[in-house]
Image (tube, rainbow, N blue to C red):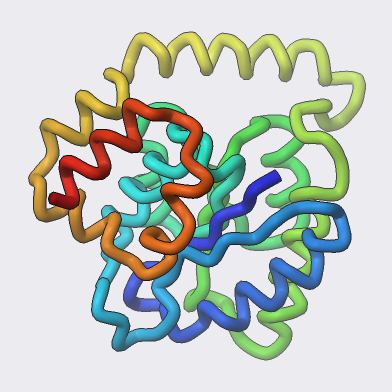
Length: 212
């Protein structure tokens, strides 16, 4: 699994701490981590939490990433932004129990963590425990196990609702402010990793046009 890490500007200073915890947990599981930034508060490319949603949607819909780890000060803005786009189901995760139940019940492909609110002593350990429970087993298996059948049914219903509610991502990107989208795709990590990992030629071509 390709796991993308994205930080917005208010919490960019924690990028290396988050990356270290993520790699420590998931690389022994066989997953790959791609750090799309921001890497520091003074990066040339400054991402807002809205742009985090755009970048997450491009990575997930293009196949460049299978999962996105992101957040903001409270985690709420990043979660709302991610869930504004097709192909992204993002949970708000504060602790390992949130991580496990979101993975097993909701079977999403992104989480938003509060990197300021409640992030104090032991914050790095909490991140490790979150990532352990998020990826400890195949997602979507249900919790508790006796609820697995109705939970899987509800997830399929939700997917169907979202398919009707959202237009496709290329149409969405073209309708958004061009500079907003270009800014979301301007990180050093995006330039480094996207083209090599993208599996959708339509989105790859659109990204090239937007960046021109």
